Structure formats: structure tokens, C-alpha cells
Amino acid sequence: MGLGVLAFGDSITNGGGELQWGVALQSWAMWTARALGVPYSGYAVDGASIDTVLEVELPRFRRATPDPEARYDVGCLYIGVNDVRSVDWDESYFEPRYREALGFLAARCDRTVTATIPLDLGRPRAGAKVEDANRLIERNAREAGALVADLRTFKGRRLLMADQVHPTAFGQIAIACKALEVLAADGAEVRVDPWSLADWEETPLGRIRGDATYAYRRTKEEAKAAWIVARLKARGEPKDET
Image 1 (tube, one colour):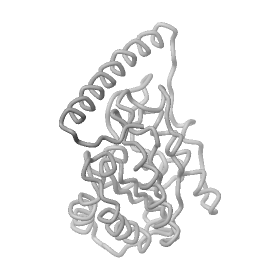
Image 2 (spheres, rainbow, N blue to C red):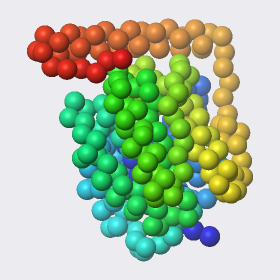
Image 3 (spheres, rainbow, N blue to C red):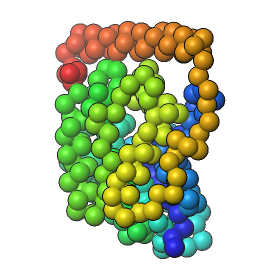
């Protein structure tokens, strides 16, 4: 028996944010640990890139753990969203660093789970390079013997915030379900459905208020995205918007 779930990544894995119908916005990796019935150790940092994982998160783990070589049941790595949204995205730079981070987990965990990136990512949209990143993720996962939760089609009002990047509280649970699905297929014992661990009650008035708030925020995000694209075009800078 290992020490549970060990997780690295960005704000999506760090969790935290607004309640959704009274459900706390907790990390998908934490929901995964709860569903497996094991402890959780998270080192994800808001705004992290692959460099943050290697230069900040892994060293923090080494300093904090009494045994850096201890075994864990499951390792979780979800990184690349901030990298691929950057105008400086460079696949040849990202790949060897991603491979290093994934290998770090694979060497210490009985099973390792990573995830692809939603294709309809961000506003302005990150565009076609997201699928390039996904193929990179899947390729390196195969080489490392890691499992992949496919989030390419992950989207929707209940699962994603208006920025089309960050999951809602329900979105975090949905990502955990994707991870648990591939873990179960690999023989891991999933003890409970994470949805059964969350209690909420929706009301008609609450839905109206929530929809209105979301529509307002989504309009702001779309207007902001249009302004950014217009500025880039005015400067003659390329912007991948599909």
C-alpha cells in the first residue's frame, strides 16, 4: 500500500474558488484520492507552467517529504494549459520538460495519470496548437506507461467557468471521474463515486441567478478576447483563433 495520491500541476489541480450550489471547488486530484479512499498530497501552484513544476513544485516536494523515494498509489500530473495559451509556446521546449515531470511521478507511483487539454481552450482561443500539445501528452504518456484522461471535449456551462479555462466545482468532480475511469480500467479499486460525496440542492431562482451571472461574465470574457485579437492584428502579430 502506497501513500495515496501525489499531484503536481497548475491552478486546475490546485483547486480553490467559488462554491457551486454549496459544493466547494476542490482539486480533481483530491476528489480522485477521496474516491479511491487514500490520502492526498498536492503540490500544484496557481499559474504554473511546466517550468514551475520542475523548478518549484518538485523541489518543494523533496523538501517537505521525509522520504523523497517513498511509493505512492497514484501520481497526477495536469500541466500545459498555461504553456499552450502563451504566445511563446514552443513544443520542442515543453516536451522534454514534460517528459521529465511525468517520469518523476512514474518512478514513484504505482499508477500515473495525466490529461489532455480541452480543444475549446480560453478566450481568445488557444487554437490548433492545443491538439499538437495533446498528441505530445499522449505520446509521452505511452512512453512512461502513464494513463491519460481525455479532456478534449470537456466544456459546458456547469463544468467550466466563463473564461473557458478553469473548471467549476462540478467540473473538478467531472475531471476526477475521467481519471477514475482510466484508473478503474487499469485495475485500480474505486471505492466510491465522487458525485456521491458532494451534497447540493438546486432551486429555480438560483439557476436563474447563476445563468445571469455566467452570461454577464461570459460576455465580458468574449469582449476582452475580441479586444486582444484586435490589438494583435493591429500590431501585425499572429493570433491562433479557431
